Amino acid sequence: MVILGPASGRRKRAEGLCAVSACLLLALLGATDAAAQSLTPELLSPEPGGFVAPQDLPLRRTAQARPDLNALPDAEPMAPSRIGKIPSYGIPAAAGASDSGYDSLNRRRRAPRFYPGAPRPKRAGPGSPAVIAPPPPRRVAPPSASAHRTPLAPSMAGTVIGQPPRRQLKVDNDPFGAVGDYAGSFLVKSAVETSGGYDSNPGRVSGGSKGSSFYVVAPELMVTSDWERHALVADLRGSYTGYGSTRPDDAGSASSAPANLDRPSFDGHVDGRLDVSRDTRLLGQLRMRLFTDNPGSPNLDFGLAKYPLALNTGASAGFDQNFNRLQVSGVGTLDRTTYQQSVLTDGSTEPNNDRNFNQYGGVARVSYELMPGLKPFGEVEYDSRVHDQAVDRGGYQRDSTGGYVKAGTSFEFTRLLTGEMSIGYTARSYTDPRLEKLTGLLTSGSLIWAATPLTTAKFITNTSVDESTLPGVSGVLTRSYTAEVDHDFRRWLTAIGKFTYGSQDYQGSSRLDHFGAVAGNLVYKLNRSFQLKAELRREWLDSNLPGNSYSANVVMLGVRLQN
Picture 1 (tube, rainbow, N blue to C red):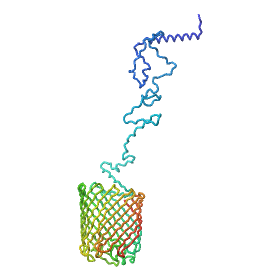
Picture 2 (cartoon, one colour; picture 1 turned 180 degrees about the horizontal axis):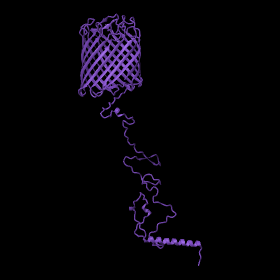
Picture 3 (cartoon, rainbow, N blue to C red; picture 1 turned 60 degrees about the vertical axis):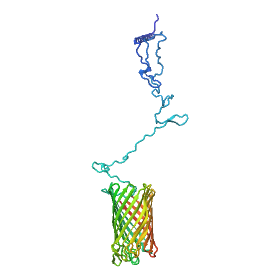
Picture 4 (cartoon, rainbow, N blue to C red; picture 1 turned 45 degrees about the vertical axis):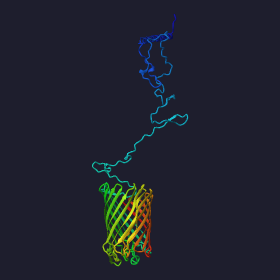
């Protein structure tokens, strides 16, 4: 009999308890149904192509009973023990990645598949990893017209129920032009220019006269309708030129220049158009012109105290008809010209009734649009002038009939060259057989060339047949040619150069005058309402008859206020 110590007894009891526990566990496992399915880690193990559903895994069968140490060789072995190994939870690294694309374990992947239109990979160089090109930018709709704008009140925006929609303003290409105000459906623009300067020969007399300071006040008013159909435009312009004191011995009895050189002028017309249909329009015009004879004119009497005023009033009515590209228009005219009686330096007066006359006439024009921007035309005019007195102060009968025929074209090429040019022939016959027939070449037109966005060139030519009071002279055939260049150094600073040349042919006399003028202007625009102007001008007249030539220099500074 061996007596064990306390430690040995405890060790023996522990080993006995372990053996009893193992026997109980084997008994429970043996009592389990052999056909029952065992839950093994294979249910959660991933396949190379991803996870496998539990229903797709093969069923594993466990042994019917726990085999003992002498188990048969063909029996299924027990699962290996995990004691001392790193635990595995059944989800290895990169188990959720697909079989293509990036792999954190740097394993070989399949080539990616691209849908139609997808960007292809680009390689920077040999051995470098593939770089996927970024997808094309998505088209984004442009912002609305009201984006980044301060919202307007409904009353200002014209969206109040019952209120008429707000009128959309027209595009104004002149950033310093007058804005104007609306009066109902009419746009009203007004302006006034005040300027002063010095004139070296205000009377335009031969040999020169005493220079004088002067001032000019020139108001303007333009009213334009804003209608969908029809049109009505009123353009009114006037001026008054006042000179300093002039002594009678400087101008008066020795020349045709009056003692008082002040003179007003006004030129206004109102044009209307009535749209009967798309191709038919009725035209009308009312006009008035207040003027005086030009300084230095041979029609002025000697010893005048001031310039006699002349008034021309007239009206026109006609139609304008389109036949596809063919356009036909006809206008009838009626004008009357009257002269104020002359006031002499001695206080006496002299009537000018023999210079008053009425003119009746008409104009017909036919044009055809060959192509957009090119429209040739032909024009015919005929008129008759009837004076209040059959015989003038020189004993001549001044009544006459005449007209002109001309052909030309209006054009517009790429909006850089626009205008109208024509050439023709004019003739006028007088009642008095002593007055020879007035004939001559007729040129008229206007041309505007927008050379650059800042430079514009203009060319204007005109021919007119003017009345004369000189004995034996039928009339005066006046031709003028003007060239003008406007250049904007800045939008608010404009320089204008202007050159004029012309001739006056006194039919029935050997007199032939050539006149001209060259001027430079500078306009400084402070804003839309205020402008400063400066002008330097030289005028001259050369006559083949002695005692009629003159020259003058003019300098002027002014201010323009407009709205």
